Amino acid sequence: MPCVTPMGFWDLTEAASIVGSGERICAVLTALCSGAESPLPTLLRCLSSIDPSPPQSLGDMFAFYCNVFRCRQSAEYVDNVHFTGHLSTAAIPSVSLYLCPTTEAAQLTDALTRLYYSADDHSGASPTDAVTNTLQATHSDLSSLTVRSRCADSLTCAPYLQPLSFHAYHTFPEKHAEVYVSWVIYTAWRFWELLQQFLNAFQDIDCASSGCSTCPCNPGQHGVDLNCKCKALVSCHGVLPTFHAYGFTFGNTRALHGNNRKYCRNFAKQLSQVLHSDHFTHLFDQCDQFLYRIRAPFLYTITALWLIATLYIAHSLLYRMDVLRIRSHLLTTRASHLIDVKALLAGSRRMLSLYKDVDYFDDDFHS
Image (tube, rainbow, N blue to C red):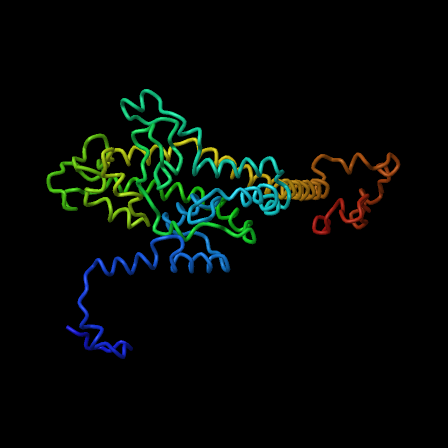
């Protein structure tokens, strides 16, 4: 039925009579925003290069931390080695007013790189991980959750997630490198908090109300051990809405539902392992060291100024009040005995003080 309101379309009668399916809408949207070379991600990336704004949602932060050191070349993502070197040698020292040496800048860059992908993490699996699928110190970077995951040594590494804005965050210009450093410093802890909220929301999924009537797991226990009885992660009806709420979609549906299918418990374990990994701890330490390098001179200066002010105030109070009788002992022997005896005996005569502004006897006393 044609829409009654014209809405500015001159051929609304003819356009509204065309019959189509959801597959056609999917094809149009795929051409518009599915890949890194699609029009919409390209436009967003160009606009962010002109006027960058910090990532706000968890999906945007995840995409930023995954692609900050990557660029798009020949229709694939590659490591942007030149940009990484520029951060270590120029951008980070410049932001820190050259108070942070190049060696510490390289450590911050390395911590950020290893948070996304660490080759040592995926060099092998421990026997306990291969048998019991328990949490381990390895296989705990961000790539173990997202589309870059190619690890076959761990039972939990898989392409679970892809941020909805994944293709809009890559190939960052060096012009704004200092801005990106500030993003990392001030969003690292917030990024971890949002990931923790994401895990809590995943565990709070109510399978029964989401459409999985045969699943016995209760809210707060979803994905914990073997509580969820869904056939796969992608088959659980409450998972995708939760992913969308935090700015994600499935990274690779076929891989998650294939022969080596992943379940809700696998994703919950892997996300928890990433949250409690040494990569986040090391990044937080480097961010703290960076902030300390910048703020230490100002802290020392403020401390010295307050100390000087305190000593000056204390000196002024103690010297004026003569609490320690310092001024009395500084008087010469001759001056200390210049006492007018007649002034002591005669009430009408005032005795002169040895001090300029203090009298021995008040006028009210004599009166």
